[in-house]
Length: 351
Image 1 (cartoon, one colour):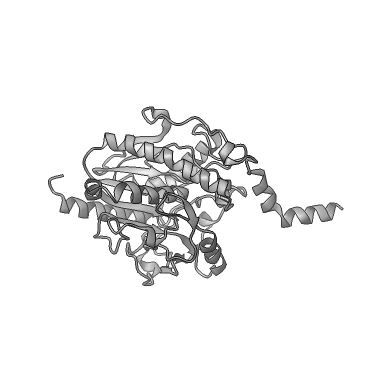
Image 2 (cartoon, helix red, strand yellow):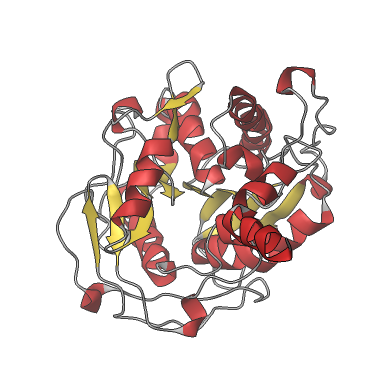
């Protein structure tokens, strides 16, 4: 009996743990946590954070899922465990590449829980759509502090999803904001190309500004992971609803080349992967360069994996389903934003 129980637990462990994150209440009758007040510093993980020698851009960064779930569809902004993961993993690995561009602001928001990324239920879609309301409000508060000058937008995983909607509904229709946009970085995010606005297109080269750099990454040879990711992907439609991808073409701009094409990029062009987990804000990590070969293929970024313990999946079951605890393209994104910011300044010398 003990052997049977142990075997069943091993086989269905993921389902058991996932079930434990289910709020067990319909979203329609759910009472979310109190809304953030973006006039208060406590509603920002970082607000106008600068490092010495940083550039002239204002950076708005939307963080990925850090709240596991359980009682809530959408996490409170003061959840201690979620905030610890944000500061230990997400900020150093994913906001870090933008610190040289300028002042970085990261809003706390009532993020949809990790559980909402593990199910296709309508409740989960509603929770993810609800989170967008906070992000939109944070963006307007941030924009009021930055009425002019170049802007850089970035988001990873769930944050990239929300950024995709923000770009299409807020940036694309506004000519003044489009002129200020250096680029939008939708990191490890699946985006339906046919839903993108021609006003903010995929980036074709690192000299282009006012465009989107976005990709979803899987290891080279892991066709099963690529197929599952595309099959289960949800994307925003024109009415602000999350719908099935349903086989549509997805965005892939290679972060090493900065181009939306399917040309293989050899490892010698890779500028550097980093595991920045645990580093304090403003501390640059050590890079391992010329390690990762990449290619956009079938709407997904295929990449080789460095043979290093620094880039192994660690943490518990929930942590391994969040954004990776390292950034294979840290130095590449850092260089990309610098190139585009320089191109923007050259085109706007009076700004």
